[in-house]
Image (cartoon, rainbow, N blue to C red; front, side):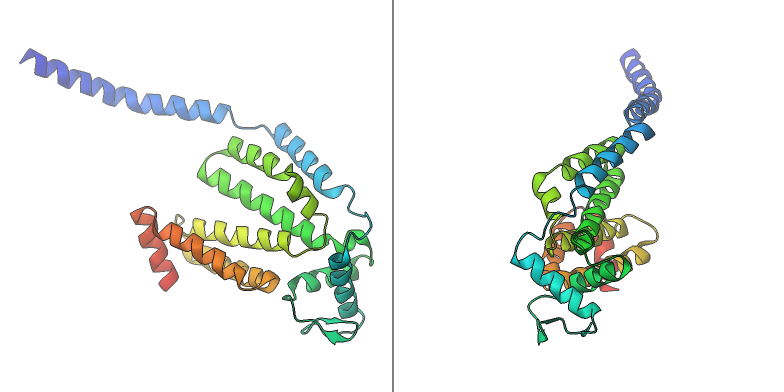
Length: 238
């Protein structure tokens, strides 16, 4: 009798209070989001970390070798088969050479222009981190993730070297972010096509290792929640 009525009354009270509590929690999370000034400061720090000192001398044999291959492309060499001193150089895929040659054409043949492709890769990687963190968590987490990633010494160092690694990282990171977006957005077909296109560019940067890493992530996603597994399976098999 009375105890049952009291229990029902308590349940009704909790049902009424729960939405209000959730709204309060959402408001508290929102109040901790970074302001435009904080984002602007983060971008300035990012520009300083990645942009300053790009014109330092070529560091090692690899940088000089890759810059020379790009210069030969620009000087009338083949854009399909990279050459070094007139001899076909087939050890690496050509995307890094193409982008470096285009940077030489757009600007001048300099140390700064030679490092345009790895800088592009760094910006791609950082933007992928921000987009993923915003979608998965919130803007505050995205800002902190951006600052942590951009201040990592190895990351900053690789953005200033004409190497394949950071361009590959940025393209593959966006390919995986697009795959993740495809599992949760209504316009999934567009995102999956974007993921495949970026994966193809990653292949043109560093070869079959892109497929290996992409495949491992797909396997991990297929082993996750049932709805994500079902949606990805239908997308990947269509």
